[in-house]
Image (cartoon, rainbow, N blue to C red; front, side, top):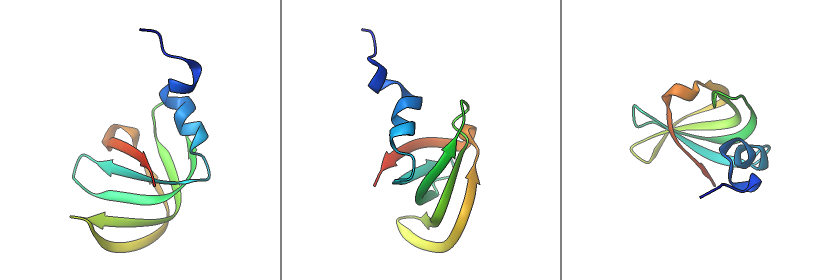
Length: 77
């Protein structure tokens, strides 16, 4: 089954630019923030971000860079 242009992962990320997203990492931590940029490796930069552990707010971070190879899930908020 062929993907339409709007179904490609990088296109979906591009549609989420400047919107709130949640990124879950391999270690179980979740980061919620405004997606500012990303690259083909799914490295992402979030602004106004918060770190959550086990569903609870751990700390407010501000700007954070997350390596794509540590991310297991990205979801709009």
